[in-house]
Amino acid sequence: MTSTLTSDVNTSATGGTTPAPTGNRATLSPGLKQATPVVVDHATGSWIHGTDGKSYLDFTTGIGVTSTGHCHPRVVAAAQEQCGKIIHAQYTTVMHQPLLELTEKLGEVLPTGLDSIFYANSGSEAVEASIRLARMATGRPNIVVFQGGFHGRTVAAASLTTAGTRFSAGFSPLMSGVHMAPFPYAYRYGFDEDTAVEFALRELDYLFASRVAPNDTAAMLIEPVLGDGGYLPAPPAFLAGLRERADRHGIILIADEVQAGFGRTGKFWSHQHTVGLVPDIIITAKGLASGFPISAIAAPTELMAKAWPGSQGGTYGGNAVAAAAGVATLAVIHEENLVENARVRGEQMLAGLRKIAAKFPQIGDVRGLGLMAGIEFIDPTATSSSPVADAASAAKVQQACIGEGLLTLTCGPLGNVIRLIPALVVTEDEMTTGLARFDAALSSVLG
Image 1 (cartoon, rainbow, N blue to C red):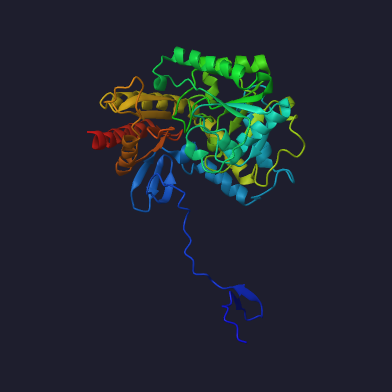
Image 2 (image 1 turned 90 degrees about the vertical axis):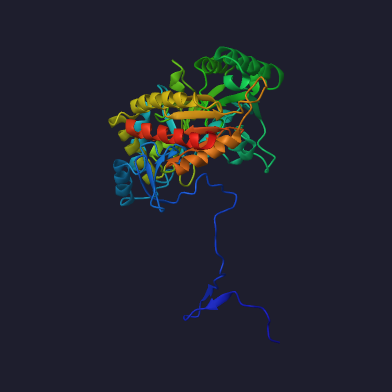
């Protein structure tokens, strides 16, 4: 009998077999949503040059990643040199010099006492490593997070994220043991800052009394400046209140510095805007290596030693090329005085945005620290006691910015905030240009 089945292999000249081509045309997942239509040809500093022949001032920096700008020559040179030595040296198998040097250099910028570092690849991995350590160290199950926080997209990290349901919906059940407390979002509540802080701390205490006992709580996890949650700086009095409660109850305080750390807010770590505050664990990623994937958590050696044997590791964590780029990034930040540049250019950005916002009633709030600015859009005709979000205007303005040669992103649980995230190397002239282009985009959409 002759088979009617079509063979899915070809016979090679040597007698072997190779898979027959399927003819599929592969595409990117439709679940990915592009914020801009730009296809990059190359990029330098604060500028992206598209295949369309146009140049765009990049105020997205890969969501706060390219801290020293695109393709900083020193970072490029460090990565190229390392590629010629060893690319992948799995750091629980063999150690490599770039990671040793990066650890030494990080020690110089970490708060006193946070002297032990574990490396991973992404912010999500580092977040999960931090809560794993907190639970192991305390023997307690629960984690308290704060409304609007973004901590990642993996299952555990998404379980900790409240910056929007899109990050955690559709794949329940999520990780248990997570409890949410209010963030002092003064503008949303219609409060002044002091009232918002008092409210949020009071509600945290009520959560401890009514839902999650402090002696069952391993950690409180907070972004000192909310990222995807709307670019909201946590008031110093609130962070100080968390530190006091953590000390009182033996709870580990974790600062998620993934987006706001590494000089972006005009201090090296964003929690340093609260004088005297030292978290128990710091999480860092994004700007750590100017675009190479590497993340880390830092904690006191005594605390880190409580991680169970085998609980920390990973195939690509602490990659040699990424570590070399991290060493170069730290050198550039120090030698080019980029933390101070972030502070000064941030003051220029916020002052310019507030001047622009005065012309448009659809802009309800402008806030930020350093080179993190959030512009919140509202319906100015609404009569409710609290602001009514206008996500449609935010989206239209973000798209109009592209036509003006400026790249921006939206954020916030309601999608009504535009965030500006320039590189730490942004110049005064580039900031002036960016503000002018943003003003033009607003005018084209809102009149």
